[in-house]
Image (cartoon, rainbow, N blue to C red; front, side):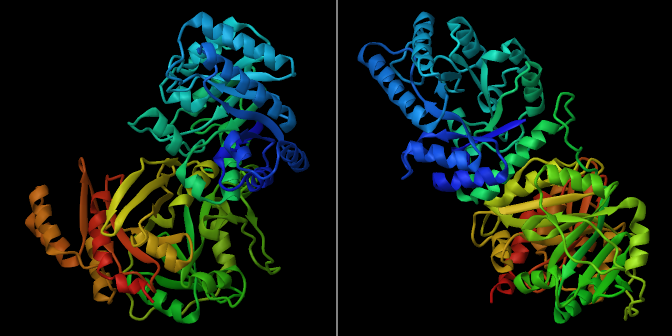
Length: 622
């Protein structure tokens, strides 16, 4: 796949955009006119810079309102065209994007449109240049790629071809099967964008909510496959308009863009038979461990919390100040080493989750997929007798370890042969598993994190929802493996005082905000934790009065929930119970859940939980 990206997709000044695009690995870039106009570099200097960076200028864009005009308006349009062709010569671009006209004075008379595009082709051909005609979804007369293709076909000029943009086609639900009618040599360039499905005007949707392939809801697999079947061998170029990306890091957005095109090449929702070779997405078999970075004082606080929740220390590392805590299938690792990544993580973030181990079938295949997507591997010196576990960088600079399912038992036996101290007092244990891990981040990082998970692992995203925090709205979305053995919930907010934003601010970056542990008996687990002295969220009586009004629940059940501060939700016949601890050292908190044929995350209870946590807001203030 030949990769390109429009400079409008990336934040910053043009020079910085081009450096970020080249560093991400793109083959070329479309120069957006406004980026050029606002640059202190002239077109020849930009051309030289792109050559030094190894970037082809894949297209200059956009040229608006060319066809369908008359009189002086037509003359001015063609004068503009001549000037832009002159500029393209200095820039080193041979392809100009001409959008279908939105001009109020333009005519939809077909013969006039054909004549105008033919003349434009003549003028471009004299300079060895081409013009790609694109149907804007909101075009005045041409807003469907089928109509744009019929015009290009009938103009029949070698310098006039088609530019296909996924947003303009898929936002109008134009069947991708219609792409098969387009002749390969007349398809000059393909522009790619994903988007969430929204009910709003097309122009606003396009200008603010486009996103990278895999981050939205468009059926891009079918669209891309239809293009490949034409025999198209040209550039696949991202054109993304998104307010979050404009506020984000140019290097991160560019790298996400490159990653998303590789993801598209291998198939977003299914493997494409004509796709270029790409290691398949990694099946995530479970969360093998969650590793905390802590100093000794923080480790004592965390240990007290874990004991109250039923965990027991079951092993000490063979050579490091690291302890393993277990309950059921859940492994928590507390790392108090005075050097290395965990120590650096603790210095920056305080008590924090620095790594998550995910069980996979093959670590080598997982690393190959990560390499293809340019997800950075993490390498550190390990002792000769240590078990090597490959890892990559994850959310907030933390690590994702790839633990092979076939050897995980041997790994634990090898790494943690020493006995840990006996827990005193002992708290009943439960057949627990990790239900999900919740991560908070800056909102502009949200789509980047989502793309990392769904492109690397065989995981799908759920519908994005807005949760009401007492201090503002929180955007929340989950990513899940098909069997839901691995689930992450992602949370970001623009509201500075929302819990998610306060966590990110005081934590100094994105990271794990809470860990949900599934137990078979929520009442037994909650009661044991309370009796062991765990600090829990105080849920108001009004909530339980409302439960009695909303659901036909046994009054004794509601009374038991109220006594133990347990939240409840129902989805059809499925039921969900939730119990929350207070935040530990202003950072991580725990959730106990019981699922009874329930697939969600208790979203209707989120505002209750957030309001309860807001009452403890001073815990987040120095």
